[in-house]
Structures are given as C-alpha cells and as structure tokens.
Image 1: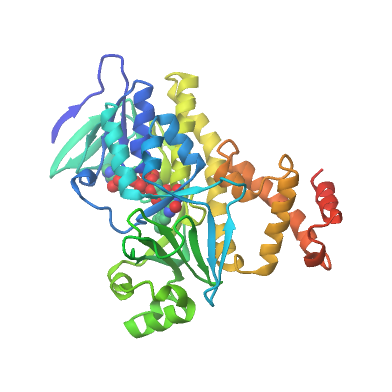
Image 2: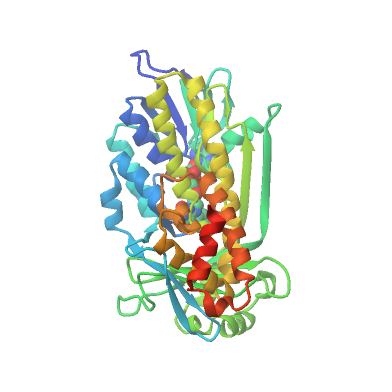
Amino acid sequence: MIEDQQPTTNNQQLITIVGAGLVGSLLSLYLRKQNFEVKILERRKDPRTGNVDHGRSINLALSHRGIRALKEAGVQISILEKAIPMRGRMIHDVKGKRNFIPYGEQGQMIYSVSRSELNRMLIEEAEKAGASINFNASCHEIDFKNSSITINQEGQEQKISSDIILGADGAFSDVRSAMQKYDKFNYSQEYLEHGYKELQIPAKDGKHQLEKNALHIWPREKFMLIALPNLDGSFTCTLFLPHEGAVSFSKLKDNVSLKKFFKKYFSDVYGLMPDLEKYFFGNPTSSLVTIKCSPWYFERTMLIGDAAHAIVPFYGQGMNCGFEDCVVLDELIAKHNENWETILNEYQLLRKPDSDAIADLAIANFVEVRDKTADPVFLLQKKIEARFSEKHPDKWIPLYTMVTFSPKIRYSKALQGGNKQQSIMDKIMAMPDIDKKWDSDEIEKLILSEIN
Ligand code: FAD
C-alpha cells in the first residue's frame, strides 16, 4: 500500500469526489469556484482517450434545470452548440400517422446531447479549473470516521484522506454500498418489469431520416420506442419492453420474430433501420431501476447524483436532477461557509423530498407516454389544460412545464401541483359532452372555481 495522502495544510480544504461521471465532473467546477482543493477518483480510463461508455444511453435530454446548472458553472455555451433542440414530441401511431405535440409555450425546447461528448467536455473543464483527476482509480473502501478512501489504481492500493468525500459514483455506488453496512441506513431498489435496448436509425446522405427537432415516440400501450436525434444525422432509438410475457424481449430471439414484431408495431420506422438485427442482437438488454436511500451522509461523506437517487429515464431528468444537486450544494456551501455538518444536513433536508418526487414523477410519466399519448381523451385533456394555461398563465402551469422548463419550481412542489391539477381535470373530463364544449366559458369558469 502506498503512503496515506493527507489533506493539504494550506487552509484549503481537500474534497475528494468519487466518480468523474456527469455529476462528479460538474460538481468539481462548483467546488473549485469556492476555492476548495478538488481530487476526483474515476474507475474508468480517461474518456478523452477514446474509451467509450458502453451499456447506457448514447444521448440524453438536457433541459432547463441542467442548463441552469451548467450556466452557473460557466460551461453552458459550448455544450449547447453541440446539442440538437427538440421542440416537442412527434407521436407515431401504429399506422404510421404522425402528430406533433409542442412542449408548451412557443420557444420551449429540450436538447439532445451526446452523453460521452458532454462527459468529456465536463472533464476537460474540471481539469482546466484545477481539479486533479485520477483515472483507473477505483474506490473500494471508505473509513467514514477518518474521511479516508482506499483506492485501487492499476493494482496498487492507496489511501487518500480528505476533509470531505462526495460519492458521485452512480446508481450502483460503492460509496453507498459502504454506508449500507452501517446501522439505520435505509435503502430500497425497485426494478421495472420493462428493460431497454438501444437501436439506431442511421443518417441518409448525411441527413436525418425523421424530423430532426423532435423527440419521436411510438407509444404502444404496454411498451414503446423513442428516438432522439444525433448531430451526425442518425437517431438513437430506445425500445422499452417487458423482459418477460406475451410481447417481450424474451419472445424476440431470432431475426424472424424481430422482423415480425417491428413490422407489426413500428412499420413506419422498420424500413429506416437496415441494421436492426445487428443492433438488436449486439446491444445489451438493460434494466430500469429506482433507488432511494437515507441518510445521504455519514460523518463527512455524502452521496450526490444517481448514487443518492437513481430514477427511471421517462422524464429525462436523472442528469438534470443531479446537476441541480450541484447548484443546491453550492448555494449551501456559500451560505454556511465551511460548517459542513449544517451544509450536509440542510442539503439532505432540502433535496430528499425533491429527488423522491422526481423518482415518482418519472414512473408516472412512463405510463403517460406509452399508454396515453395516443389516447384521444388524454389529448383532449391536454388541449383543455393548454388553453386554460394560455389564458391564465399565473394560475396554471402544466406539470411537464413545471418539471422541465421551470428550474425555480422544486420537484416536490411540481408533484403537489400536478396532483391538484389532475384531480380538477378528472372532474372536467367526466362531464358529459366535454369533447363539444371543451373550449367554452363554462369549462374555463369551472376550472377557475376549482383552483381558487
Ligand atoms: P454516472 O453518470 O453513472 O457516473 C458515475 C461515475 O462514477 C462513472 O464515471 C463511474 O465510472 C464512476 N464510478 C463508479 N464506481 C466507482 C468507484 N468505485 N470508484 C471510482 N469511480 C467510480 N437523464 C437526463 O437528465 N436526461 C435523459 O434523457 C436521460 N436519459 C437516460 C436514459 C437511460 C437509458 C438511462 C439509464 C439514464 C438516463 N438519464 C437521463 C439519467 C442519467 O444517465 C443519470 O442520471 C446520470 O448519468 C447520473 O450521473 P452521475 O454522475 O450521478 O452517475
């Protein structure tokens, strides 16, 4: 074992971040701005050397919470230059008919970004800001009392002591696993019956084969396919399907069953995927899990990002939420100076209800997107809500807007507001002839009376 590396003595506290993923690398920028010495330990090789992160989504939807966090860390512009704006959802029905549903008010959009490109950029920025990053350095033991980590780097063990340790090591966090060995640590993980697999629609003559500025969805009630655009003209598609059952991954074992399935349910896209078989049988089928735990900190070690709260991807908020974690922690550090006990405690009190809320919203959105976006009653409800919100923007902000476009509204408040709106809309949608009078004064007055 190499000698214990101690925190510095120049009055600059050393913060060690475990994980140079999306959250860990952004977090380091905030901590450097507050003038901490920052060391990052990353299990993988340096992604800038061409090492690609396999097994997870190739691109991600970046929205306002994440953009705000990047902006406040000073990195927004260069990342958005390499992002594709998506102005709404393009719904593809089973006959191939398309219906574009804008995300809300004019100009509202989310962005498709490359996960690996974003991670590489953030790592680059972290180094430029003065964070030191040890790649190939896997954290495998933590002494919480002494805030020290034992790492394994290329076969050598080394102990690193810090003033603070932040575990940003993702959904299957080793920092969290170390906490789980202690008394009174609450932990739950819940897998969906659905898994996912990534596929591809290649570019044709360098161009996108579908509308470029949209998030494409093929909702099929119990399963769905989505596609996000890439800069090179291709789309990354994700098929969400139960692992087992009558229509499931387990039934798609050969090219014949795969072709039949795609021709039946996704006929309009089948012809755009010449390498379907290669991607389908070459790519892994991955699982979808929600992880909740508490407390998030022991002594001076705290979890952040997916390590504290892994959620399913149906609201496109996992990374955005993790980025917002960095903003909240940064504000608390500024507020409480280096009073870490107060910072960690207040952080958890503030953030836990919000991460629980977005975890629940993400599961609910899966049902909404795959089951309801093709349902005329649901589409009518959304039309009524949009009309009302347009006329009374101070009284009704649609749930999707609160979550995706309103970084100042906490996820927990969005969830509460969304539940209230749903109970009002349940009454409205139960009215006879609602399809004929949906845009009448009567409906508007009724909603107004229910809100107040
Ligand atoms: P990670 O990105 O997992 O990074 C953790 C890092 O820690 C990794 O680099 C890992 O190598 C390192 N590490 C792990 N263990 C150790 C160890 N012992 N020692 C040292 N290093 C270690 N979010 C969105 O906002 N929008 C989306 O559209 C979206 N789509 C998604 C689609 C899919 C299919 C999935 C699975 C997720 C999606 N997410 C999305 C969620 C998003 O990917 C995560 O929320 C985000 O990656 C979390 O970042 P993180 O830094 O906390 O964890």
